[in-house]
Amino acid sequence: MEDKMPYRDEIFSKAVRAGKRTYFFDVKTTKGNDLYLTITESKKKTNHDGKSHYEKHKIFLYKEDFEKFSLGFDEAIDKIQELKDQGDFPELDTNYSSNSENDSNQGQGYTTDVKFDDLG
Image (tube, rainbow, N blue to C red; front, top):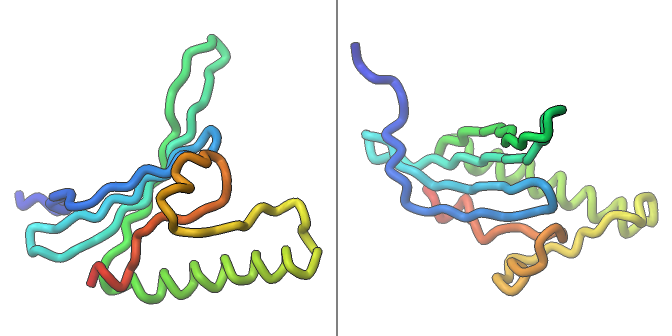
């Protein structure tokens, strides 16, 4: 039986810590040498008995979807900024940038340097 799972040769990885959550952006290649991106949200949870575990949610994003995903993501972030600027949601902190000096500002709003255009 042929294995249908992606090859998963990892060529780039970026972890973004944000409070109790960590987001992982991993660029990988398939056996066919196509690029894809996995976005993983990992959140630390504590059981009733006090033991910790991590709850993970993963999205696989393939090259044919990079542009549409990027456009939708950018539009959603722009809308959030617009609503904040209008004063509708003043409590939002949306000071986004892709500077690496923001990596030390864990838990504050920022994006990674992953560029979908560079992937395909």
